[in-house]
Length: 410
Image (spheres, rainbow, N blue to C red):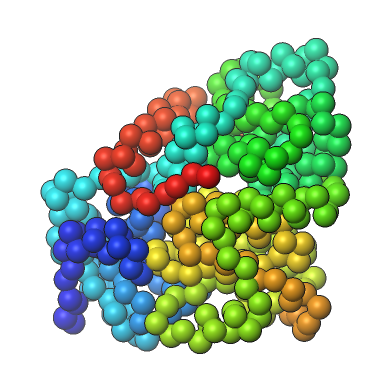
């Protein structure tokens, strides 16, 4: 099978010019996490049949595949061809050629979202407190509320004692209910750094009256500081004053350059066969299951920002978000826009026909092929946690050396 080659320099040019490209690493996730280009997405060759049509919705989008010498390219190209994909090329020389060209290699997963989070903190000087400082505030019963922005299942596994689960995109919608007194200090935490930085800055960008700080280094930092974690908690924040939250979120989205669409304008985007279009419903699972717009995939907003490489591997594609209350879509869109995406929010569509039922869920990979995140579960080693932070602290400088990101920070 003849697989046309494309050089590392040509791939870099496509990224710089923001042309559509899906740069796909065909190795298992554990190998992918050892090193890859910034905007590479992981799609193991054995999962192409499971994942391709959900993650690569346009069959003639430019796809560039590579491995690190394992011989996976020919099999991947055949599988894509069998599914009807018509523009599949191979990175000439694979990952080693990318290295030899002098281009940056990024480790870990969700790397460019994590690098973006570090850039946000660097540019906006996002305020934070150490685990020891937060523990001291709790010990003296200070007027603080800790908001955990991770997925509900992560929160239930382990959490900062007394914290409340408010997944990232829900913050502006629910912070007013959790901390109604403007004198209350809000502490935002995740497992590590990215989601707490983005969550804290979301509340600051929205102009919330409370003082807001991140828990520096999240539950990993809490563990490294020898603080006890709680397990099995089930506290969840409710929705506060909707109108105020909607206005705040709309203003943040406007400042980030987010566009709003009607259903007729969405139809025009859908009719453009030359561009990839992703459609995501960013509400919680319960809301999506009760009723959602046909053809919109479920992806809670806070996770979408961190996992955008997994959700939308075609860099340069268009993204449309929907949310019946508007707040979550606007806040999520504001971050995706700053990450260089052409992103839209769909308005006024929940009074029509909706589909009910759970979302499509892709089968999980074999555990032996997964990269074990140092913030997963309760048994990660202290050495792995510290190594993770050492890497993350260096991401801003690595972004500078790479030079392809195109991020901006409002």
